[in-house]
Every structure is written in C-alpha cells, then in structure tokens.
Length: 312
Image (cartoon, rainbow, N blue to C red; front, top):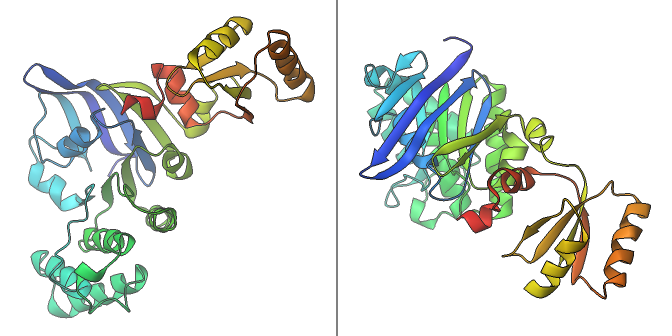
C-alpha cells in the first residue's frame, strides 16, 4: 500500500436530477483518521457507499488500498471493514455467536477463529455478555459488537459511517477510545460524522462536505485557524434586538435561528467592557453572553453561512 490508503478524484454521483456528490477530491493517509464532516443529506453516506463498492459512481476515480473500486471491487472488499450507521447485528444470536458467524463467513480455520472471537470479546469488553442474546444489549454494547465484527477479517482500512449516532456520551467516548487503539495499530479509519466534537477529537484531517461539495479540507487546527479568533457570543430574546445589535458591531456574524451574534474580540477585559458599554448605550440587553474560542462549528458557519443544526 502507498502512503495514501484512499485516493478520490472528481467523484460524482447523482440520482436523477439531484446531484449528491459534485466532483469531490481528497486523499486519506495510511494509518490516519480522516473525517468527512457534514449535516444530514450532505452526501457522506453516499461517499462511503461508493468507496466500499456498494454503489457505483457516475464519474471520477476512486482508489482504496491501491485498488480501483470500479474495476477491482473484490480486492477492495477484501481489504476493508465497514460499520454503518446502524449496528448490523443479529438480535436473536448471542454476542459470541454473532462473532462466530463472521468468522465462518470469512473462512477462518476453526482453531484460529475461536481465538479471534475470544480476543475480540476481550478487546471490546464483551466477555461477560458474550453468551447473552444481543436483544438484551445496550446501544453502546451493540455498537462495540458491531465494531468487533468489522475487525474479524483483520482489515487495514475501516469505514465508520456515523458510528456514534444515538449513543450516550459515555458510549460515544468508548467508541472514540476504540478508534484511537485501531489507529495506533496502523489501521486507517475513514469516519463520517455530524458531531463536530467527534471530528475534533479523532481526526488527523477533516473535509467539510456541504450539499455535495467539499468546502474545506485540513487538520482540525488548520480549519479553525481559518476562522477569526476568539469572539464574544451574544444571545437575544428577539429578532428586533438582534437586528439592532448587529448594526452596532462591524464584522459581526449573526445566526437568526439561534438569535445569536458573534463579535470578534481578543477575549480581554477591555474588549469585553467595550461590547457591554456599547450595548448599554443603545439600551440593548443580551439574554446571555459568553467568550468563545473557534471550533469546527465556527468553521462550518463561516464556510456555509449556516450552523450544522440549521443545515440538517
């Protein structure tokens, strides 16, 4: 495998008149976490489906593990593991039986297969629940089992399509820990997510997908550096107050849905005092205010003019 585990150039996909992917390009370095970030409907799952040979592209070139997905689909499938948005586990079987089924499908030898099952149950903290029906598992346990099943064949490239959707914070962090362990072992992870914190925590490189186009790429820090630094965030109770406040501050960014105004600031007490004094002079009062350093949500707003919540 070359330094790029995944290489995508000019990828296009449409369903009738609806263009889902409009000529996107990106590279995923071997042994890294690449996060495709965007709201529902942005084209994330379609991208994963093309890269994992589940659907064909309308145009462009896609290489996964040095194999062309259009001409060498079988080789691509042998090199990858895929975990979708919903856990693909059989609720009537136990956790151990689900893993054994994957071993049997991968044609592992009996002795080696049993060892793999035991190791994965241990690795994903499922030993105590191994002989219980999956129908009794929590959402976090099902997701861990799903990830364990993905690893049965020892893939070096893993696709995780919104793997923590619907999980509680503790289960989400458990999945993050597993992803970090996989990457430490040399596995390449392609992660799609709606969660900005998730991309910030895990990704070496982030691509922001909006309406089928990549609007930015880079490390989390590089993307955050594209947004003006620390700012004061004011939240108002009505649109009229927001309108009046926006006229007071040049360079401010408003969010009409959230009734918030973001004002560039260095975060110091002097600049904060000036903001509050200007509001007071205009007889305006914010419901809440906070000092905020840039995050990936700010990046998305700056690039698209919308928050991820508003884009859904």
